Amino acid sequence: MDKLPLISSPFSEAWPTWLMFALLVCIVMAEALQPETIRTSFRTTFSRMQRMYGDSAVNFWGLVALTLFRLCVVALTLYLFCYTQGEFSILTYGTIILVVIAFVAVKSLFAWIITYVFDLKPNTNLYMPQYSNLWTAACVVLYPILLLMINFGEQTIMKWIIVGIAALFCAGVIVKLLQHYFNGIPSLGYILLYTLTLEIIPAVAMVWTVKQLV
Image 1 (cartoon, rainbow, N blue to C red):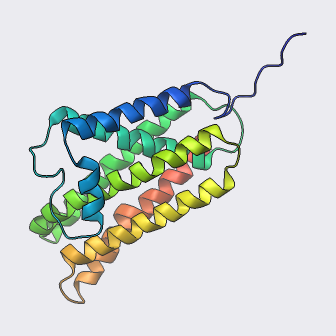
Image 2 (tube, rainbow, N blue to C red; image 1 turned 180 degrees about the horizontal axis):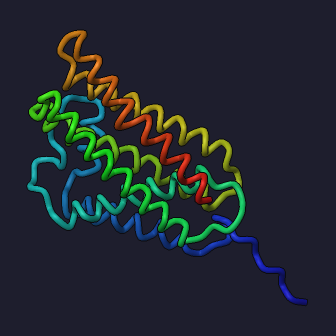
């Protein structure tokens, strides 16, 4: 008797498993080439430390591996969060990666504009390494969540956990903005503008865009 073909989903496709293995290799490589990358990311999340990668010099390939890890984790998180049914395609995943890259590029442009309009380059130079560390810490936490979503059928609880992680990330961003940019009541206007323009609106727009793709 012929076997019925499996319905395409995160549980039946082989590529998500290989992707997660590749991402594990990336973060291990980043940690090996740039020692204390993960530890420093979590430490700066709860302090005003300015270091980005520990005490050693930045390693180019370590930075590339870390960037790939974060980019692919964010794209897969969006895909799994928005996915309900239908074909779970690596082509769609690749498209989502391009969407994330596009939004990062737009965010970077607006960040540059806001920084120079408000003359905040010194503050931004201190803030951006910690912002990068926040992303690393969030992606490291998301990785095991994605593993569970790929290998087990219960999705609702995991999606709520992702929402919780996103909320904590936003709270961390606001704390860092206050630490580095707060200089009296007038500066709250800039912080609000930054949060809306570069965090909340892009996040909502990315989720909406991915929902159209899946």
